[in-house]
Each structure stands twice: as structure tokens, then as C-alpha cells.
Amino acid sequence: MKYAMLGDPKTGALNTYHLIIAPTYDCNLACRHCYNIRIDERVSQKQWEEFIDRWADFCHRESKSSIAHFKGGEPFVYPAIDDLAARAAAKNQMVFFTSNGTLIDEKKAEDLGKFYTSAKGKVILSLNGSRPAIDEQLRQPGVYDKTIAAAKNLRKNDVPFDINFVLHEGNISDLTNAIYFAKELGAVQFNVLPLVAKGHAENNGLKVLHAGKEIFQQLDTAMNNDAVDLLEWSYADLIRKLSNGYTCEGCTAGYRGLAYARPDGDIYSCPNTVLPEFRLGSIDDDFEKVFDGPTAKRLRAIHEGRLVCKGELEMYKGHDERTETLEASDVIIKELCETEAVKKTNCKSQYASTGISEVALCFNRNL
Image (tube, rainbow, N blue to C red; front, side, top):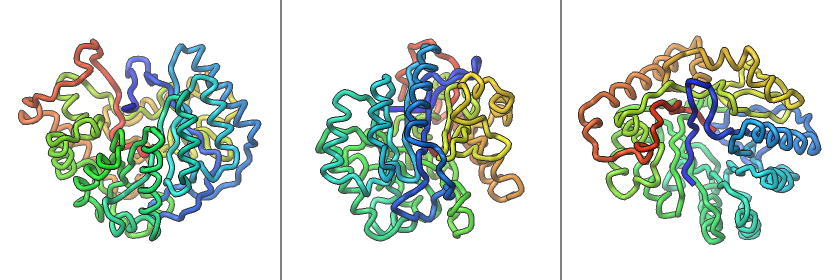
């Protein structure tokens, strides 16, 4: 399944409600670009189960299809992850996992294959280069081979998977190669994510890159050369959609139906809005309270019209260079949408006949 976080700016709600659950920040790796810091885990398995039940009930009341998206840390180091995923699936939730892939051996892939015979969803693998030397700029030696093995194991068991590619100065020249490598592996979707400069990535010498013309050109070229299906909802595809008549009201942070629950039980809108002033509540709160509270409303309203991530705009306050880079990418995207070259593209949106004239698209959120 292809997926992008879409919503209605008139109602301030996602089309498909999306709950991100990080039951643990523990991980079997220590990647240079990881933005998580270790915190105490105070939520029991029973509390997570009750939380998932209440989420499903809330989505049912709102008549919304919905996702339970398990992240970390590494979700597969959490002992009860299979139980939580099964509970979400039993409640008609689509189930996503975002994983480094190193724990998806043949047995785990077989188990996931059985799980997805009835459940809907997919696994999202992290892979930041088409070759080990490039991926190892962010991750430890040997991780690349394990992730490739995971992709092959998943494909063998008919488990749909995406590739998340965290973009930085050291791998931008490998972007095109990485796209075609993901296609060769059998990925459903290739997601380009900007490196977020917090946590480990804040002071380790990695340079943050955002949507720019060089990135767009590589994606656009790949789309014109047999990778169009893989790159739906990429920067290039989004620009094509926008130039075909869509308007974009910006980042979906604060939207109704978007929530991120941390291991300590605190709820934010998404991982990039984990700032004290944007805490929406806790897993003990009713979802109506979480989404109708003043903080969620303020998140929806700030940085109106920005196509880039609101969380990063707030996070980088006081860092002039990072803020300028982020703001520049916002301008570049808008300029590209206005160019005649893009307007004349023959790549028409598959949604052109739906009658939807406004969608909210998140260009830069690392989910």
C-alpha cells in the first residue's frame, strides 16, 4: 500500500487517523542520526493494550479508518510487540512497523507473513545508502547486510515493506542509486526523510539537507525512468500533484487524528514536536481532550502556509543556519510548483477525478 499523511485543512483532521506508539526507546543499535534520548518506561503492557482499545473506539466513533504504527527505539526489541500488534489488528487497525531490520530473520519474517495474511499494513525499513560504506556513515558496520537480508526475508514471505532513506550531505549523491536498489529489493515505497538535528544527530558533524533542486531533479529523473510507482508521494510527485491543481495548506502537526505516544506515556502530535510546549496530554487522557485542547489548536495554527515541518521550525529556533536552510526549502518547493516545466508535465494525479481540491501534505516529517 502507498501511504502519505493527508488531511483536510478545513476541518484540521487527517483523512486516515494515525497513532504512532513507541513502547520503548531501547534499541540494539546506536545510530549517529537517532533523535531519541533514553527515558524511563513507565507504561505497562496492560496500559498499552487499554490505550490501543480506546484509540480503536475513538476512531470508530469518528468513522475513520486508522493506523497503529509501532516505532522505537527498535520496536522488535520490545517483548510484547507481537501482542500489541495483534490487538491493534483485531481492532481493525492497519499495523505499521518502523524497524532497522536487523532482527527480522527468516523466522520473524515468516511470523510477519502469517500476521499480514489477515492484517493490513506494512513494515518500514531504514536503509541510508545503496552500498555498505554509504549506509555506515550513519549506522554500524554489518547493519547494512542485515537490513538487506530482512528485505529479502520479507519479500519471500509476501510482507509489503518500504525503505526510509535519511538524507544528509554524505549520501545525496547516492539518492538515485538507492531508489533503484530499493526497487530491485521489492520495496513498495521509497521515502526520503531529512536528517533531524536533535539527539545524537545534533552535534555529530552531520549536515542537514532539506528539499532542494538537486533532490527534486534526482527524484524527477527516477520517476521518468521506471520508478514512478516507488516514488509516489515523494517531493517530485507531490510537486507534480500540486502543479496539477492541488493546494497545500502545509504540515499536518496538530491535526485531529495524529498522535505520538512515548514510552513514558506522554503524547505529542508527532516525533518532531516533542518539545515541552507541545505536549498534548498522556495516554490516560481521552482522545477528544488530546485533539480538542489548546495545544493541538495552537499547533494547527502556527507557521500557516509552511510546507516544511512545523516541529523543525520550532526546534531550530536560535540556530540561524538550520532555520535558513529549512525556510529556503519551503521557497524552493513553491518555486518548483510554479515553473512551466512542472506545470506541463504529463504525469497526472491519480486523484484528479476525486473532486478533492485541498489536501494538507507533510513534506519533511520523519515518521
